[in-house]
Structure formats: C-alpha cells, structure tokens
View 1 (cartoon, helix red, strand yellow):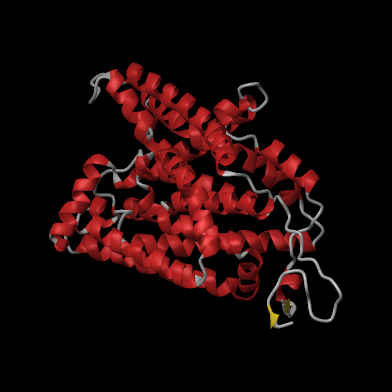
View 2 (tube, one colour):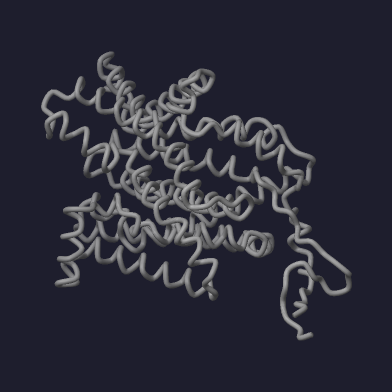
Length: 417
C-alpha cells in the first residue's frame, strides 16, 4: 500500500469519522440582522439625501456592503446545503426558484400597483413598467433578479469548484476580475474600445443586475462553505486582524471618496459602488462581519447559550427576508405621512434619517411578524426560517465546532491506497 490522503482514516486509530457538520449555523442569525439593518439604514439615507451632502453619500457608499453580504451568505448557504444534504440540479432549481420566485412575483405586483396609483407622471406606460420590474427587479428587488442568475449557474459552479484545486488562486483571480470590471464600469473612458463595450453591455444587461458584477462574493461564499472548518480555524486565530484590516480599508475608502470630492467630482460619482475601492471595502467588511458574528456566537455557546443567541437573534433573523421585501413600501408610506403632517420640515437631515429608519424598521418588522402567522407568510415574508431551523435542528444533533476545537492541532490524515 502507498501512503496518501484519504477521509476516514486517521493515524493512530483503526477507524475515524469526520466531524458531522451541523445543518443549521446559528452564527448567521446575527449576521442577517446586521446586514438587513444596514439595508434599511442605507435606503433611509438615500431617500433623504441632497446631491451635495458629502457626509451622507460617504455613508451610502460604506453601507452598500449589505448587498454583497447577502450575496456571500446566499452562495455560502447554497453550497453548505449541497454538502450536507445534496440535491440534483432539477430538484435544486425547483426548490430555489419556487421558494424565492413566488415572493418576488407577489412583491413586484404590489410595488407596481403602488407606483401606478402614486405616480402622477410615470416614465413608462404601466405595462412596460411592470415587465421591466419583473425582469430587472423593482428598486431593492434587483437583488433577487441577480440571485435567480446565481441559481441557474450554481450547480455547474459548485461542480467546477469541487473539481478544481488551488482554491486560493481561484479566489485571487476572482478578486482581480472584480477589480478590473469595477475599473471598467467606473472609468470606461480610460479603456477605449473595452470601455465602450462595457457601456454597451449596460444598455442591454445593467451591471447592477448582472451576476458577473458580484461573482467575487459568490465564489467566496462557495469556497468558504467548502472549507468551512479550515476557514474557521483561521478565523479563531486571526479574527482581530481581519476586523482591523476591514477598519483600515474602510478608512482608506472614505479618504478616497473625500479626495475625489475635493478634486471636483460629484458626490454621486465619488461614492459610486461600482469602483475598485468600494469592492475592496465590501470584501473586507463582509469578511469582518462573518468573523465578528462567528466570534459572538462562539462566546455564547461557551457560556451555555445566551438569551440573544437562543431566542432573540433567531426570532429577529426570521423577519429579515420579509423586511427586505417590504421595507421600501414602508419608506414611501412613512415619508408621505411625514410630509403630509408637516413634521418632516422640522426634523433636519439627521432627524429625518433617524425617524425614517426607526419607523421603517419597526413598521416592516411588525408587518412581517403578523403576516408570518397567516397562510400568506411565505408568499409575503419570504422563506419561513423558523420552520427551516426547526427541521434542520431536529436532523442535526451535532454542535458547531468551538474555538477550542478549532485552535486544537488538526489530526494527521493518512491515505491507504
């Protein structure tokens, strides 16, 4: 027999079985809450900002990490599910498209009806507007349009990355492509024919709705899930460095933005979320968020579970899908109410942002809490995570690896062949 590497055989034992991974990862409850709150806060800013508000547009750029945070999480969850409970492509597509497609269609109709009633001079005819929203996504729903593209290619992407070695090289190439594309989108005039091609693509397939714009976070999510325990061994030792790096990148991105404004660029161009410095920030802050929520959850586990991790965070995380789908409707309604009552004129910019954020978050959370108790819960509130968590928790007795587990030396694996 020749020596090598093989699962199921650990040196010094007759047989060994790899740790059974838990089917439900509680750390991502807090992750979802932070990312969802950032979405609502960022939109509260956007709907109250004047073009020349330098501080406000800086926050808009920084808070846009929430979108890539959800793209990373979606790719991670899809991959983790395929590893722990595999499905064939047809079963995968059926489950995912129905699970998200019906809420997407329902909310597209709701926003279309609201716009038709509210808009006195629409840019398009009502049916043109409807088909545009259905294809590309109304406002925040573009995220779902991008996820549908990911669903389509995910079985192939998963298969290719499982068959491909050198995953660090793959991740590096993905990041380089993301930065190059961001440069081309932000400064198309500097690239001659390539820049004109990028602008041409925008006319038919907007980069904001194009999965290639976000491929780095998709690839990162897949690879992190494939190397779940290896990644968290690294996180257990170096999470402070990851968080510190993100803080440095955030400062650098803000200084870059301010430098562009002081050089004469408009706040909209300077805060463009499709520019290289923004993509670096998004990557760094998503990594930091994953590290911080993992560390928070591990500390909770080591203390025997806290009220936050065992009760509050799961309940709030259950609302995040519905809040994402519904919150723009509440932003519109609350802003209209503030204008009609004359309150908005007495708040100042910071006050308007604060009131709009708090009321939007509270109203959308209450709405989702109520709708999840009805038969329309999954139609208007998105996937019912409480049911998923109960099902997966019942199937999975395994506990997540603790920090002590991850800091322990890895066993030596020997292949028998």
